[in-house]
Image 1: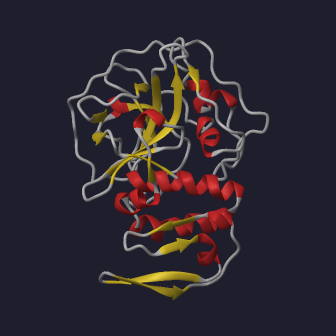
Image 2 (image 1 turned 90 degrees about the horizontal axis):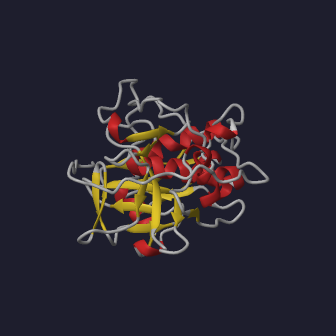
Length: 279
């Protein structure tokens, strides 16, 4: 469960007028019925800060996939799973064009798991798997083959379910038990620690625990002379809500990649400078 940290401040960032060119082969976003307009991609909506350049990412990589995430039209509010508005619209720079679900499940760590699973599914569904908080390794390939789990107290044991084809609809069903029994603690164990100065697109700011929180690094830009870095960040929160790009109090969407007094401030959580992880 995230906790509020209302006291934070970053300098205003002016944005450059140019956006990243789209990749030769547009990334696949399996939940969309049709490809999103290029003008609504993250890279088009949020140019790098003035004088900065986005860091290189490999074709087909997790970082490239995040860089071109489809966004809903500017001004779209973030909503909770039940349709109500998120109470902190001031921290929302944009809303990712992806569903929340109808249950209070897709919260902070679950949003990271959701996006990572969608990326893996778009390349190879057999690579989709996540550990539950108990340590149980839950594979999508097992799930569609008819293998799931049951929980009794603190014990997780294998269970049977009807087998089905590895479709995107099946992936949506796989998310329900995954979100229910994975969280910031299990996700933090999935990631290897990396220092904040080495941040890359796709890294995760994460504090595992109860309460805990996770914020995904969507993109990174750097100034070629000063080497100062800036981050685009996204999160879900409690209750489950739209995955949204974060906005700083100044109105800027790019956050300086700097720890102050050992802490990295985001609008609704303060992370330790050492709480960055990578898949």
